[in-house]
Amino acid sequence: MGSGFFLFLSQVCIYIAIGNIPIGVALTLFFIYPIVTVLASWGMFGDRPTIIRIIAMFVIGWGCTIALPSGDEAKLLVGVVAAVGTSGPALTALLGWIAIGERLQLRQWGGVGLVTLGVVGLSLERMFKAKRRS
Image 1: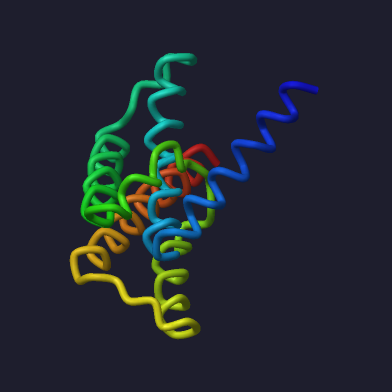
Image 2: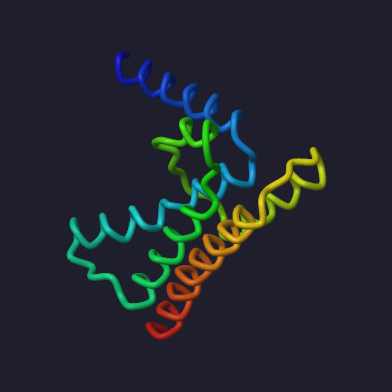
């Protein structure tokens, strides 16, 4: 019961934090999950990262750093991690701009693009790896 309560509380806190920053930036920050996944798979299963994974992790990290809002907005971003589709950050930022008029700074658009590029790189690597096996 305690575990369920704290899971619920963490979800409430995440959604409150996400509600206080632009949606394009929030979804971009969700995309740090590949970095965690690659590092955990290396530590737990001995699956050493390939050069493509290392580059993709660097690009994703760089993109998230660029997309971070500055000032007071940045205080609500601790611990926001989740998995979504590869084009999610770019499409969500675009739809946020079209549908509700959310504006991102040019550097934040650059961060969204870099994160999307890094996640696409990881997806392409998996796709090519699967083709080689078959």
